[in-house]
Image 1 (cartoon, rainbow, N blue to C red):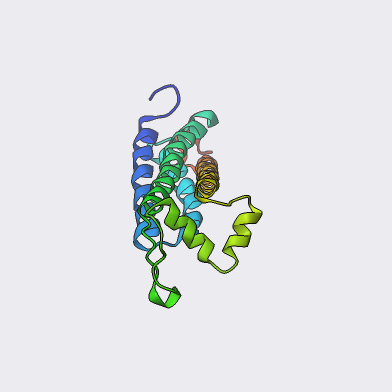
Image 2 (cartoon, rainbow, N blue to C red):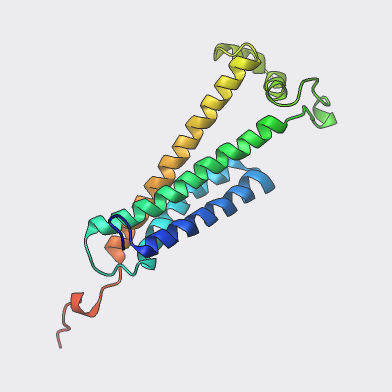
Length: 188
């Protein structure tokens, strides 16, 4: 046990990293459905906040320790979820070569990377007007706009995952198993 988190919570933090990587690879790379990532992020936080205290065998003790365990595991999990989102977005941003399905008009003519991502957004129905209304007029302004949006998304994911971790800690604190000395004697 250290000042902030029990050993079990530190191990749970690593479990949270693994969980975030599995969820990220599954729903950002293999089956790219970002709304599912959004749905699973706070749930992952709840699970890891609860698990941090269960793994620490926290049957008694102060609420601050319970919340500290949940916060530590939630922070590690939330940081992994947010950083993984940014890494995957960066990969697709840098590697976009303009390929589109022939049914959508065929490949875009652009330089790989930011120019192709910008061309893809412009090619969407009404894309040029929507981008212009946001102050985006060229590749460099688009790049700044895009990464500002992605950073905002990552911060929101971090917050909801950490919040989930704290909820998990609160749930554990309310429902935690009691030791024999904490149970009221039975009336016969």
